[in-house]
Each structure stands twice: as structure tokens, then as C-alpha cells.
Length: 344
Length: 280
Image (cartoon, rainbow over the protein chains, first blue to last red):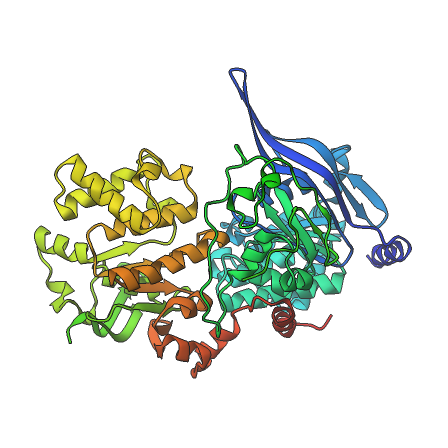
């Protein structure tokens, strides 16, 4: 175990490479019926990198393609979804894995190097068996430890996260929602993976519990120097936990940047709206809402996909697709009128 | 001064345990408040899951009856409503809007059918023209039109639009009170404020009172006039929304307010850092 940790530390000292590099990724849902081909471009030309030891937030509304994106990143896509173009490369301590060029490489890395925290904790833990069986099912074969050593490691890990190891003997329905979500976090981090994908882990929780769970995630991340992709539509949660933040709209990235810079100075009109419309205790100003609705990915608007709802749209927006270019605040933005929007 | 809705020591007990168990738990415990008929307002009920806020909503809609206390609407005790005519008269005045618009509408039923059925039942709109006129008028109020909705199914529209249709449907009988149980928690972020602002318009223009049930203190602060904060069935704090939410006095309300993450990275991450169990 220590050798592995030391090797990890060494690798990071030598190669400060990105843990995840995504280039020009396109993943479409493709249906062919009676010669009619229909494409839903859920992930459309996305490039991003995730550094070591950072929380990379992805914000987007429903049907913005954020779930499709993380499924594609995790190599967990099934037909009719297909990767049409682009690449997803992980770098786990010097060991490179190209998810779509050599998919068999990913299998031994799962849970050991790449794990997930999912939204519905009840769907992760087996409802008819004690929690310890879930730990056995998920983690045992990835840890390479004998029975006794495995359980002492699991107990030690639970204690480090401030959980009572006795929860192993409980059934999921005996635990509260917050407790269950903490257990799924413990489950996802017991192998000390370098990369964690967290999909709306706090959405189903009560506000008071939500903060504790976020604190726990941040805690584990900082201790293990892991990288997290954190997906949620809740901008306040991103403000609390994400180091860098990407805003998705209709299958494409609209803007990406350091969270503080993005909140202080949003460059894309959509980001400006998302941030400007957040209500806040102590502030009674009227918040405006955007006209229209998020587009259907099966029939997206031409040019910039945000242009029908954009208050700053010009003629060019409906004809040309804006590329992700470096923005004035050190991030990237895909907008012809970047920087003109004001968070109101 | 007449009262639109008056809750007088309302308590709801549910039996717990097995078939022969005599134990009960109080889902709602001794709740009192009054909405005035003259002055429409948005009244927020705030609490976490299990605080009894949804049970309270069901009682206000007449779906559950109080175990103790008196819940009267327009001077009539809801437990005395008997018969179809009286019930429909009550339903016309108190209308619900539910949390998840995707579940509230049957996916196999066209959305305009809901509007026509409501118009038929409560407005006695016997012919097609009358029903369509009523549906269109209600949809116009929420920023839609019958032309956009006619023949559509729920999967064809976004959550925000569906929630608007749900509000339009509730408006058809010209209600005096709308009970909205977590109406924006399933609506997309860019459309959420449009629903919240719509409630404000309904209050100001149609003089409809709204019971706004939520766990989100920030939107409650944004739209409501008065607020009650519930914990385990009890009202622990109540009063003017701005005053209560800016300066809560009870420990639980203070904790709830502290749990609202501010939309500012520096402040919010400082709160999360304070919650970390072990220092990194």
C-alpha cells in the first residue's frame, strides 16, 4: 500500500500532467430506423483538461448534456450512444489510458483509480443486504488485500471520514439520506482513487446535511490529492466546492474558468444570467428570467446554440459557431460578444 | 376583516407501528396562522423534509383532515364539507400546484385536456368555445397561449413550461388560494425565476393568495410576505419574511439560514471549509 502511495507521490513530482485530457469529444445518440438517421448531439466538440488535485465543476441545466458527458468520460456509454470523434485520456501516475482507443485498459483502473459518487445513494447500496456487502462487492477485488486486511482498511477509512464503522452492519433503509450519501462517498474513496466523478451528489439532500456532505467531499479530495469532476446544476454548490467551473449549454461548453473569476466577471451572457438570477437573503432586487427554453438536442438552433435566448445576439450568432477561445479573465469562452454581458 | 384561511391549533397524527399498535406520531403539531381575505399575500412555509410542511399542504387542500384543531376556509370548517357540490365549490377556491410537473401530468394525456376538463368542471363550460376561451385566458396569464399548448404531450415541453401550465390550470376556476408545494425545485435554473416571478404577478394582479412551500430560504426571502419555519411538525418561528429570514432568533432557523450557500465562491468555500471534519 505504501509503495503504491509513494509511487503516486513520485509520479506527481516528476510529471505534473493533467489527470484527464479530453480533446474534441463528440458523442451522439444515433438512431437508424427504416433508413432514417437521427442524431442527438448530446456531447458536441468538447475539449477540457482536469489537473491533479482540483475540483472541476460542470454546471448545466437538464438536457444540457452534462450526464452524457460524464458517462462518455467514464467509458460507460451504451448504444445508441456512440463516440463519433475525439479522445478521452486519463493519466494515472504516469500510466496513460486512452478510454476509446484501448477500452480494455480501463477495466482494471476502475474504482482503483477512477470511481464515482452517484446521486441516488439508495440505488448504489444494495437495499436487501447490509452495507458491508456493498463494500465487498464494489471494492474487494480492486484492493488486492486479504479478508482481514481489507476489513481493517475499510474500518480505518470510515473512521477517517468521521463515520462509525458499525454502519457496516446496518441495512441502507435504516440510515438517513445524508448518512447513506456519506457511505457512498466512503465507498467511492476507499481505494484512494486519483479521479472521482461526482454526479449531483448533494441534490437529493436537505440543506443542513448538504453542507456536511460537501465538506466531506472536499476533505477527502484534499487529503488524497484527488481530482474530482463535480456535476450539479446548483450554482451555489459550485461556488462552494469547485476550483474551476465549466458551463454547459445544449451539448457544448459555453464558458470555463476559475470559479471566483467566473462569478466575479462572467464572460458569456448565459453564465451572467445564471449567476445574476440567484436569489440571495438580504437582497430584494427583482431577478429577471430568460425568455424561451433550453433547446432540444435533436434539433438545436444553428450557429451559437444560445442565440435565440441571448439578449446580446447579433446576426453572426445565428450563422457561425463560436469557438472556445481564451477569455479576458484567464478562462475560455465561446461567444462573439464575450465580456459584454453584465450579471444583473 | 374576514379570514380566507384560518388554522386554529391544527394537529395531524398518523398511526405508526403495526396493525394493533396504538402509537401515533404528530406530523403537524399545533399550527396556527391566518390569511386575510382582503390582502392577498405569499405565505411561505419553510422546513426540511419530515418537517410536516407537505402534510400541512394536504390539509389545506382538504385531502387530509386535521386530527385536532380547526382548519377553516372562508369561514367554513373543512371537516364539515359533505357532498359533491360543496366539495367542488371548495376545490374551485383552493387549487394546488405540485412539485414535479413531469409527474403531475399523465404522459399519455394531451395537456390541453387538463385545462378543458378543469374549465368544464368548475366553470360549467359546456361547449368547446367556452372551454377554449377559458383555457386560453388562463394560459395568457402565465405567458403562454393555447396555440402553443394544443395537442402537446408533457414530454414535448420543458419543466418550466409545464409548471406554467400547471399554474394556468390552477387559475381556471378563479381560485382565492393556490397551494404550491415545492413548485420550483424540479424546474431548470434559467426558468426558475420566471415561475417565482409569476407568483408575484398573480398576487399583485389577480389578488390570489399563495401558500409557497419550500426548503429554499433564498427564494422564500425573495417572494414571500410572511413566513413560518417548521421543524418536526411544529412552527418554531413566524413573522414578516424579511425580518425573520434576515434576523432569525431560534437556533434551528439560524442553522437553516447558515446552511444556505451564498452565491459567492469566497464566502461559500469558507463555509464548506468550516464543515470539514479533519484538516487537510
